[in-house]
Length: 520
Ligand code: F6P
Image 1 (cartoon, rainbow, N blue to C red):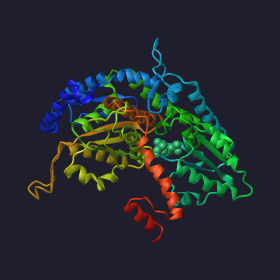
Image 2: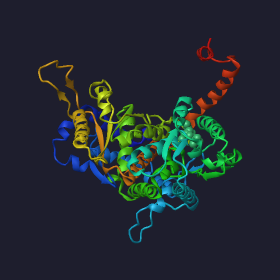
Image 3: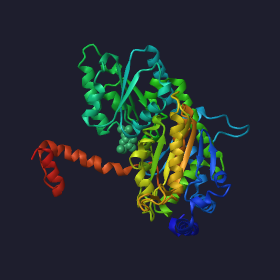
Image 4: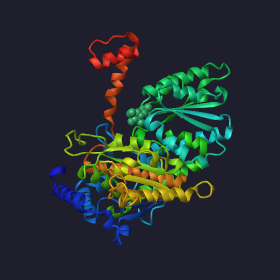
């Protein structure tokens, strides 16, 4: 499909003009039926898109666009484990990690996600190791080293499932090459009681290699410690880890991308802290979302709606991003997790075949937890000159019993979505311009019943599939990330120059900055 030339693309452009000029959400939401028609129940997640700046005519044409982009066929290829990442010649097997825990398929139906024994075996080895280490009780602390997809998922899951992490070791995650991060984490740790997990798919990432070298030196400084007994490597390059002296090495399949890897051996910190049963519940929750994505008609399919809304807002309404505001302390790292998942997947300027795209693809994803965010950037969301959609994510029930907090939190989430949509004047007659809220600002609301291993799994799988849907409609490869390479290469060059002081051939700004860093 040639996107901007396709007739349905033109229809959607006409809808965009109409919606921007005429669609008034206040009026639209006075009519009964819009909420019922533009909201749905997916596994563990209720989704309200009725405050979106769209309507059923837009959804209808977006679904046509999805059909023209062969979304059903590409979804089937993804879930069957076919090669969907052409620039790296790989499948994308994150759903296969969850397949063993999928809900039983209705009689006569095959489960839509292909089982992949190799991929499952690695995950089961990890779970067995986690149980063994938990039972031994030898380690009071775990230091997880990794960055990007090798840390964001475990970090988020550990925070989100903290109530399930009783009785396991204390886990800290260190990512940054900034030594302040590691220095702080090491305070109070005792080598003899610490397990170090090094997660790096490539086994070349500079941050993780540097942190690993420092931590190995720290372990080796204790003569009573045989460091390989205190370390686990998780990598798709097991030979490199073995060569570095690691004995416990968990394989990471090539077909599982870093930002999709929390379900794999990379999830070891969660399995250590919370135990195998909780980890399996997390996988099972994701598997229910896989089944929903695979089997529900596109017109009532949660990841399809969200992916199509992303395409609509970015490519047709030309909005530059999306704000993510989780109203749950356990989800405070969700904006960072989604930043990598979405921006690394769909921040692309060429189609999967290398030809340039002629329309905006993914915008920026950013956010902070509510209600804190209300006292930071909500001013901009309500009264700034730019309009971007907001995703509100909340859980109906809290995991604490403090009276009053949860109702107040939920009331604030609802109120912010309402205020963005409704607008108005805060104190009629006073300071008309300053106190005026324009309204008609769209949002999406995702409500979990409770933050549990299952609902967290479903929420993350929902977003993975959302990213795939948008990428498919845009015709891009959501599974590679070439855009991170140039900076890595230049950093290697500059590290050499930090030692030599040689600025030859550099642009004048970088040469000047190098001089500053060297104390000039
Ligand atoms: O920054 C790019 C990236 O390659 C991410 O895609 C990845 O999640 C992260 O670095 C860490 O990579 P690795 O697991 O290979 O250390």
